[in-house]
Image 1 (tube, rainbow, N blue to C red):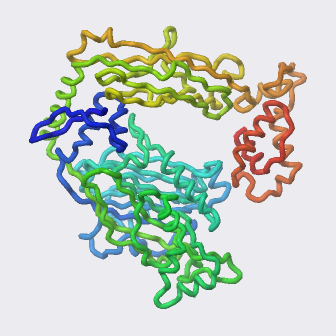
Image 2 (image 1 turned 90 degrees about the vertical axis):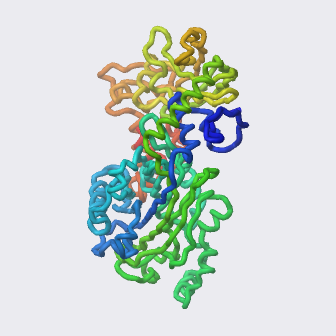
Image 3 (image 1 turned 30 degrees about the vertical axis):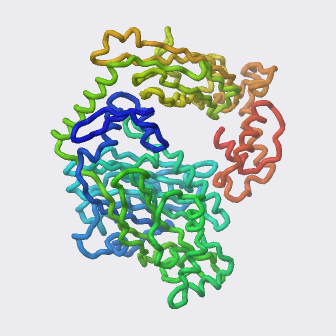
Length: 611
């Protein structure tokens, strides 16, 4: 059962409603405190204290191939020709603002930052012309993203809670491919904008699908004490070089169909990988895209209007790599997006064409503050009356967390379930073990660390130990151990329930156990050069200074392996990802003193970077 407040015949009442599988019911099951619970109730009933408005949103995407155009951007960003038709919001996503070489990917952020600022300045001068405020701008290696809102909306305090995050995809996650997300609330709707550059190559369709899954499910955007995922938002607009290609084999036939009058769009679109994969439910589930009526946006000869069909060039199958899609949160009354246009601009400096789309999204503008406050106070009063009738109780599915063998920089996780077995809302948090000052050790994450459960609701509690370089030395020396206790405590009541505080302050002890597997990773160089044997050896002892190694033997083994097997001549060493299982095996071999298995040079190079 989930409990909610609703308005009937002009007044609010507490109603018990059956829990369902909707996203909102999950929100009800877990909130961090009473104020947040009231916030959730207000959000659930926002149509009661808001009025409908419309927002026009422009989205643009362009892979610029590390080029700086001499052309004016107005043809891309201002295609309507009249300031009265200018949108309320601009989302600009650009890919490859710098070359995706080893220096830009792994070593230096300065060039990316410089080029991103240049692009922001060019956008603002040539298209926005002082009528917009940049809410946020972010860069991540080759990706650049900026969101602008009309200045008069900013002055009306219509924009709040903006935040941004970035995420690399691929095995190393260094940013040659990845995503930037910018989120915000405009009035009382939440919007997130995503700019991505996904895995390239016609044969890598499954990799692109996995890139989407990683970004959509793992991207977390923090603002204050809140953490948002992409699917938490009312609206998501997703732009970028998604790199989906055409499932066609005859390049000359495709060029012939493009050059036909009119072009054979039906054949080309039927071969489009993104349309095929999305229709089959294998990627971008729930997202929508306007009908494509423009020719493929890739691959052109830069500074010409001609596809790169040169026999002596890098001939590529034309494709709609550059896309704009949107997602509306399901089961939310009143939310809708109306698309207006979807087209490309004929700028020529890059091997891609820029793409643009214009939308109208339904929004909700709040009523005057006095009316909102009255509605909130009535919610709180009803909630207090309900709480005062009950005393909270919770049960745990088990009182032990077994993390097993814990390896360096590898999260180890176990879970238990907290259930509200009483008739009142139950809120818990974690408190310090007597004699200590911290409730949760720095290398431990407990999710959620605090939680408010409605009667009958359950929540999975996840405990994760992650021994990073910062903590590894203490574990290797024996100063720190995985074994410890957590204390889960119910938070006392408020207001009219003060007399029951002591009765309600109940603690439950959770035993955490596991074994840390010593590793040379995270050890100091001074320690490693005086270690006689691999760190997990039973014969390990400390060498006197006159017998110490010149360099750690583990580092020597890695470098020697790379040198002896031609690492100096390996293409894209330190740029191409290694294989995770091989990297893990190399680390184990170093820690145990075992010979290396047959591994990729790229896996060995990635191990060196981690060392």
